[in-house]
Length: 375
Image 1 (cartoon, helix red, strand yellow):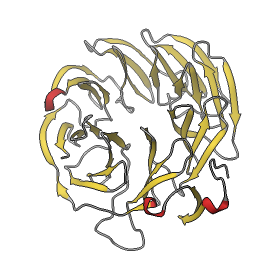
Image 2 (cartoon, rainbow, N blue to C red; image 1 turned 60 degrees about the horizontal axis):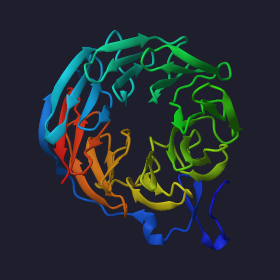
Image 3 (tube, rainbow, N blue to C red; image 1 turned 30 degrees about the horizontal axis):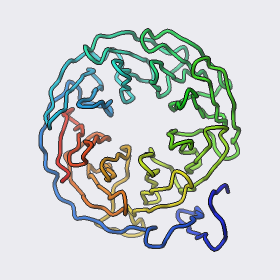
Image 4 (cartoon, rainbow, N blue to C red; image 1 turned 180 degrees about the vertical axis):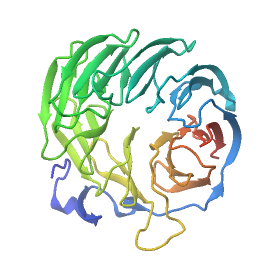
């Protein structure tokens, strides 16, 4: 096991859950498990607006607005001052959106497994649309006026203004790239399924280095950065902290079950594990700051949460957790305590809190844009 900052056995605590052994260092007992729960109450709905879609994907967000996409249309909405108004709408095309729209300046990238499409954020004017060379695209990355996307076993770099290829780097034949690459300081990182973390120069596509850790992971589901630490969720139910310089392991945390989409925010790494906990880890050392119990499996408990599919979100010292029974749980970032438990109409699996953490946007199953008060 790779663990950083374990200076002595006396600082280790062995915790067994879900059949997994976790070595936790430097963590006080009160901070490990937070069991404060709040009673369920209906959320206060401040406004609802009908979009042109019934199946919304998570929105792309920019200051004062968002880009919505789904099965029928691509739309820009202004969301200032607690009100929403549609600025423009464009037909989605023959295939629905699968992934969250990406935004970079005036460029909006809308995508699915079978297409990539770019539009002007200001006017909604379509700029280009392409299909994959192979069977399907991965989750794309839009950054620095370029698009980085997996196409079968090839990582492609496109000019975001024209959709034309700049470079392409092939991975091992038979390995499909499914998850998004990540970029930092001109280096593109990809861990596609061959057990290797690859680092490419973003300008030329030249491979700078690779780190083979195939015995420990197959791929990394998502990759985010905290300073010079790359944080990724592994295939074997682990969270990894890796050096952005060479990919070497700085820390490893065994969650004991599949990791849902994690969040790197402020000085924390947050994720939900189906073992029944939400964790906050130190992004520097991988140690536990707190964990909040979400479900007790061996008995019925009215305080149990439903599983989580929506990505965790954060704003103004609050962590927003939307479960699959349309209940919003809000945790205090400092303690891990639950401060709000709000019942919602049946919603899609995403939430967008405003910067002050007092209100949040959601999408309903009928395709409405919903604004709620968190309080």
